[in-house]
Length: 372
Ligand code: GLY
Image (cartoon, rainbow, N blue to C red; front, side, top):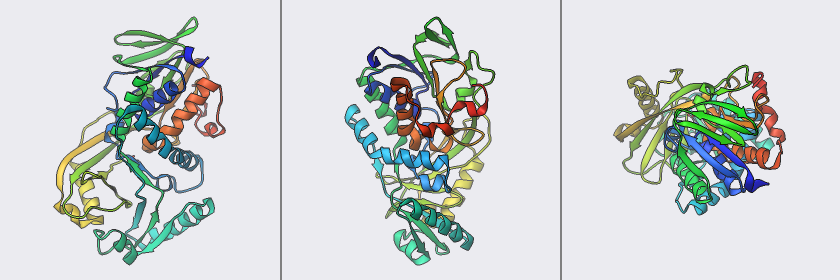
C-alpha cells in the first residue's frame, strides 16, 4: 500500500522536511512544495535549542510532546546524517538555567522536584558552582539549574540534510509558487498554486505561520496560527567558549563548535514583518551582557529573524482535517519546531501510512479550534 501513496507536503521548513523524509523513508511517494527554498522560514533563524524542561516547566501536553521528541533525537539525527551523507552538528551539552534573582531559585526548586518525579537528571547549583561550570557568568548571579540531557542541533544543517535525504530516497522537492488553496476533485486533492495545480492522494499542511493563509475547501475557518517574531544574534567569540546552552529570563546563549555564539531571542507581535530591528538587537545585547559580561568583547556576525507559528494554546496542530478527508495539519509548533520535528514526522507518518492516531494527538488535533 505504502509505495503507491502519493503525498504532497506543503512547507519546506524543518517540520515539512522531517515529515517528507519520514514518509519517504517509510515507502511513501512524496512531493515537497514551497515557494521559498528549503528552510527559509522560521527554521533559518532557529538556534536549535533542545530543552523540553525549560520550554515546558509544568506537567502537560507540551512537556509530554517535547520530552518524547527529545528521546527520538539521537536516532533521528544519525539516520538523517547517514541517509543524506551530510554532517549535522548536534550536541547534548546540557543547559544551565541561571537565576539572577533569589525568587527564581524557588521556581527552579519546584521544577527540580517535578523532574525528579519524572526520573530526569537535574541539579540545583549555587552561585559559586554555577560560576565554576560557566566562568564567564556575571558576578551577581544567584545560582542555577543544570539539566544535562538538554542540547542543541544546527537547525539549518538538519533541515537541508532532511531535504537531501528525502530526495535521495525518492521524494521530489519543488518550487511550487505560492500555495493558495486545497480542494477535492474526485479521488484526489488539488493543491492550487500560483504556478498551477498539483494532484495528490493526501496533503500535509506544514506551512508554519503561513498555514492560515491557505484556503481549505469545506473548512469554516482557517487554522488559528499567528506569527510571533523572534530575532537572534550571531556573534563571534574571543577566548574560552561557554560550555553549554546558558539560559536566563531574558535570553539564551548557544555555543557553537565553530567558535560562534547565538543569542536568542525576542518574542514580538509584529505581524508578518520579517525584519530585524535596532530595538531587538539592543535588547538581546543588553540581556546577553547582563548574563555574560564577556559578550561585550564579541564580534557581531549577523542578526537573524523568523516568525514562530503560534496557536492560541501554544500547542502544535498535528492531525487530520475533519472537513477535507485526506488533508493533515502539521503546523503551529511555536517555539519548538526543531525539537518537535522527529515526533511530528512520526505521528504524521503513522497516521497516513498506518492509519494510527497516537493518543498524544488528543492534545494536538485541529478540531480543538473548531471545524477544521
Ligand atoms: N525555542 C526558542 C525560541 O523560540 O526562541
